Image 1 (tube, rainbow, N blue to C red):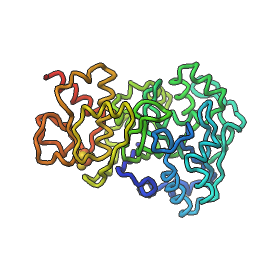
Image 2 (image 1 turned 90 degrees about the vertical axis):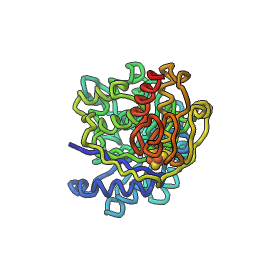
Image 3 (image 1 turned 45 degrees about the vertical axis):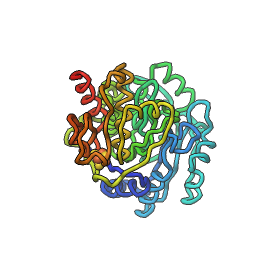
Image 4 (image 1 turned 180 degrees about the horizontal axis):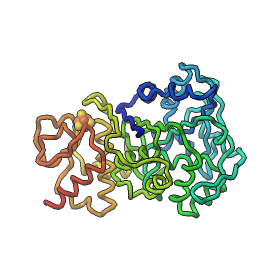
Length: 364
Ligand code: SF4
């Protein structure tokens, strides 16, 4: 079964190169004769990646550099921003015009594309012709929350591959089933997730959380199962993941399939603001926390807030390298193992933090 590779850090370009090397993507591409490779980032709105909604261009640069260095030169970047935004503006604002000039890469605005009718999972819908024309598609979503589907990552990012009229129809159909069917019709060979900055609440950004990691895999169902856990959800909290699995798109089983390259203490980071983040920070005592740990705490506290349990917490959550060798009430991560209760892992996922916080609440 396909594996999932995760690396923590903030150097997007270097992380992308390292992950593609580890997965030996070039070997897989040798099966094609001069393949046309499509790269599909998430440029849902015209905002820099640090706002939490769009794919960091440095991550795409890493993928392009890796491919070109191995002789794969026929590359194209393709995207369609959401209804009401302009893809050309997003290419410019998000740094993709610079990337295009640097590597002589075409930028395709899928809003201008012809739709081709397909049928998948019992649903008929149109897919943009440029997407269907590539030999190999690399999906490059952002790890972020979504106000309707809870999660936006690998499976949902393909909604940018359909014409605007189909985006409207997908919403009218409740999003979940159409997203699963779309992933039957369009099958990326590889997914590389920008998990450096994502959004706490919405797909359009504005409440950025630094999660400090990049995730890569060939199975988008596996990628989204892992992503859901990072945001504090179970697979069944995001219905389209299970629907896609049932349609044969991939497998949600994580056990034995995740290769995590985390190294303690190498990735201490700083944390952006935003009203909701500032509110949640009141429940945290932080001392030299790494971004993946701290970001996980933010998502976990948000899940508790949604359940109406946040105000019942008996004390602050303690996180960071500064807690090594110190005591406390409730710690997150191996650095805080001296606390009375602590969540194992370096870094732990938000789902594990939520589970331990709920135990702590039930004992208090
Ligand atoms: S457990 Fe400590 S070293 Fe590991 S990610 Fe958390 S703060 Fe960083």
